[in-house]
Image (cartoon, rainbow, N blue to C red; front, side):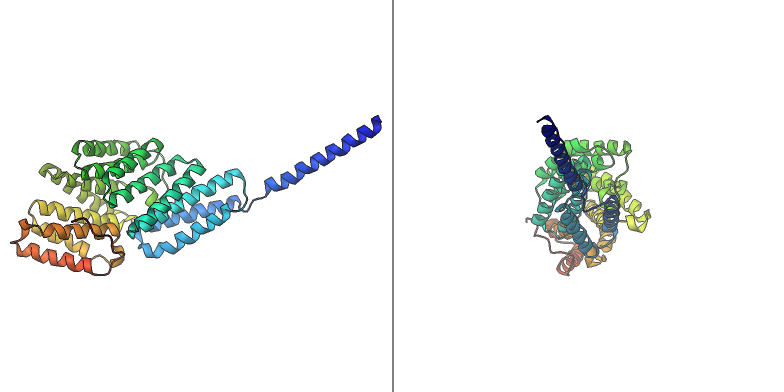
Length: 346
C-alpha cells in the first residue's frame, strides 16, 4: 500500500508540475517585444515633433494609424510591464488625437479622446501623462468659453506634475482662464507661479506638443495679461507677446509653432488697438492674414472672429482705417480655413 501510495504521489507531483509548465508557456507569451515598444516610442516622439510645425492634415493619418495599432496590441497578450507601457503609448496617442480634434474645433470628439487618454494614463499609473491630459482638457474648456472649468482642470493637474515643464504649462493655462474670468489677482499669481516653476525645470520632457517651451509660456502670459485690460497690463502683454514671437522666430524650424506665432500676433493686434496704434495693428494683422489656410486652426479663426466683432464697436465707427481692417478680417474669416469654428457669443 505504501509503494502504491508513493507511486501515486509521484505521479500527482509530475502532473502538478506539468500544469505549471503549461502556465509558464502562457505567462511567457507576448505579442510584443521591447524592440517594438521602443519603435512605437520613437514614432510617437516623431509625430509629437511634427505636430508643432506641420499642418494638422499632414499628421492626422499617421496619428490615427499608430493609435489603432496600439489598441490592437492591447487586445492581445503581453507581460504586465509591456501592457503598462502600451497603455502609456495609447494615452499619448489619444492625447495627440485630442489635439487634432481641438485644432479642428471638434470639441465633443476632443473630449472623448481626452477621456480615453485619461483612462490609459490611469491604467499605466503615469502621473506625467495624467497632468498633461488635464492640461489638454483645460484647453478644450477654454475654447468652449467655459473659463471656470478651464481653470479648475488646470489646477486639478498640478498634483500630478512630477517633473519637466508640465507645472509651468498648467499654471499658464490657469492664468489665461482666470484672466478671462476677470480675476486679476489669481491670474497674476498664476503667471508668477508659472515663471517660478519654469526656473525649477530639471527633468526632460518628450518633444513637440508634450513639452512647454519658454516661447509658448510667454505667448500664454501675453494672452492673460491682455485680458486684464488695464494699460499697465497691456504694456506687459506687448512685451510678453513680442518676446514669444522673437523666441519662436529664432528657434529651429521644427520648433516654430505656427499656431502660437499667429496667436501672439493677434494678441499684439488687440494690444495695439487698445493703445490706438493703428499702424501697429496693420503690421501685426498682415502677418495673420497672410498665413496659409491650413495654419488657421479653430482657435485662430475664433480669435479673428472676436477681432471682427471688436472692430465693429461704435468707438471705431468713424475710422476709415479701422473700417478697412474690419473688411480684411471679414474676408479672411469667409475664406476656406482648416476649420469653421463655432460662432463666438455676440
